[in-house]
Length: 300
Image 1: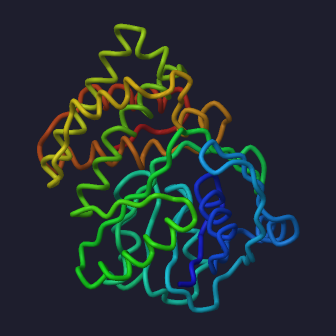
Image 2: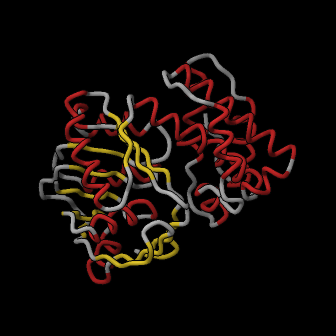
Image 3: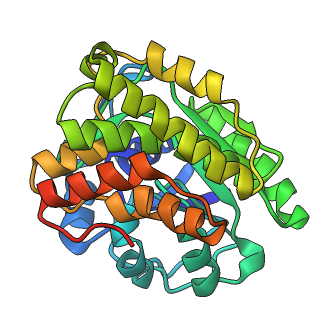
């Protein structure tokens, strides 16, 4: 299976390097300066799960060669522009992005029957080009196909990823795996980004702890309306057990003055809630506070 990784940031760089280290057939697709850097110097990884290592996958600013799979691992805000780098029709497209609305964009760009859902549970950062720091104690990728003809290719992909040290779970439905991640992520992103606190500090503050729980419950209600079954208590327990120094990538982006994924995460939840005539007052309030802090428009 030949795999292209689109966007070698914290997630994509980690996945591409893991695949290359395992001897899999992988190519990185990135902006020209990044592609040149990876081609010349490779990717260096410091990982709590896989250890410290370097890998040298080939890299290009355009994907002209046929591949079996494209793993789209950009930030949600950069996906549309990054897709212009793919000039072939891959056999399968799997996003590992935050949010949920990117599925529609991918099905506009590629044949809908070639797109499956994916999420990755990981905490990574890219402090420098092609330098990846992975700190979460575990990593897991969830995959699911709305089209049953993609189940076979997804199983093959799962085997490739697992040989690279990346555990995979095959889910029953796209809505289930996408919303299961978004429930936890939205709560973490909204609270850490609005407060500029770690999850440990949020848990120890009664007001912020209440907001964290409210975000989980509000997002879970939306997820249920979208066809996902969410165990609220399990998600709350996971957030209670998370490392106290954990922050969301959105919080880090805002602190660094980078473009945030507020619209792709909280905005997607609020728009889905509106479709189902539900309200998410805590998510809406924190989204407005985050937007003010970041100097951007609040999600609509």
